[in-house]
Length: 108
Image 1 (cartoon, helix red, strand yellow):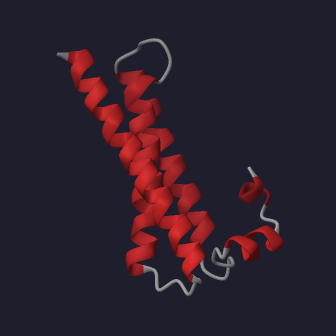
Image 2: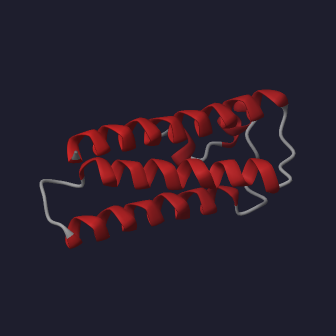
C-alpha cells in the first residue's frame, strides 16, 4: 500500500530503486497481466470467484517480473533493497507453487 502511493522517503528508506526506469510500471503491468489471465480463465470456465488459478497467475506474473528485473534490469540498489526484493520474489513464486500444488490436489 505504501509503495503504491510512491512516497520517495519510504522508497529510499527501504533501499528500493527510484522510478527513473520503468520499474514500478512494469511490475504493475505484470500484475495486471496476471489479473487478465485470471479473468480469462474465469470467463472460460465459470466458477465461484477467481479461485486458485487466479491467485497463481497474479502472484506468478508479479514475482517473475520482479525476478527478471533483478537478474537483467541492472538495478543499482543497496543490499537491503536486494534482500527485500529477492524475498518478495521467493514469497510470490513460493506461494504460487503452493497454490498450484493445492489446485492439482483439488482437481485429482
